[in-house]
Image (cartoon, rainbow, N blue to C red; front, side, top):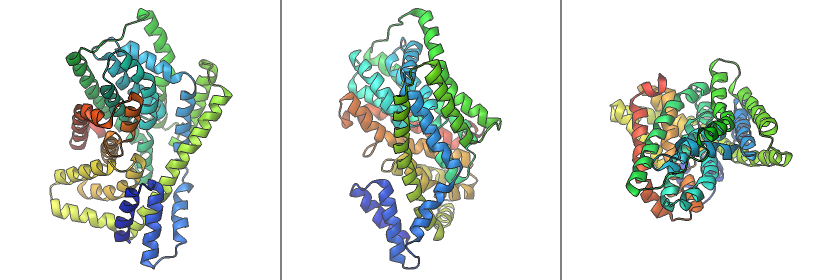
Length: 419
């Protein structure tokens, strides 16, 4: 069955078949080819993961983010980031980085981050004289900070598929996210100094800063609320996700008073669409995971790597290389669902902490979001900026180096993760 999977799945991807459908067709083809199992097993295996109570956290966290963004929540975040770092060298570029750190605690999605902040900031940056390709590069790379900030959807997926504590993953992702943000911001400062990029005016003085900080505070408190509630055992991840939706409704409806019934309806429709796409990938990946486990592929791979490479650091480096390559071709959720069960077996064989593996995997795969040929945030940012992919990739070179440096730190300095 594995041979059929390895042939059919890549061919379908090359034919531009959506990932979820390619997984389903490849899994079904493998079962038909083997002739040992009834085709009805496909329905059973794709239905099984939908009966998970913790899985409900995904649509509710997505809904919470959509409810917050239905009003002027996002604009308040952008305005606060402008006042906070806009006056610095390359300040408008740094706004993208700071905005992603704060926005990540609301959306939990790099694609949502790249779309919302890109539409809000890239036109402003271009009018101020920033090169379009540089604007796209900053937005595409900084938006991936969101996948490490609670409530990160990719971290939830890894926790579910690997049976790793979601709260441990949430806490472990905070420090790497801040290190990554600092590195990306340093590139913005250096580029601003070398190119003499203009700074944003400090309109309104400190009075305006205080007022805007108050407006942005509910969004800043969102990830704090999630982490504290989970850390002290007040509620489960699923219960916290529902509380987050209630929080977003109260803030938007009664504090800002700009969340209309139409906005709520749009948020729910968008949540349904995104959840449907994510769940289809989860269901299809479950079929592939079951087939690989049935043929003991994770165990055999772990045994082969341990015996062949011997040194633990080489095994970790090999896993990172595979993640970087897979991340350039598969969307983040699908890649996590496919790789996590395999790499968990390898990590267990060498004593690699599962929480550390989760952060390494999410960070490595997120680099693929702004790397050709798929690069979701890359294409979104380049489209908004009105520039070519080639020029954007050239501007991304220093951002790639920073991201890879942080990835290696996280992989080989476990104290950053399991402190």
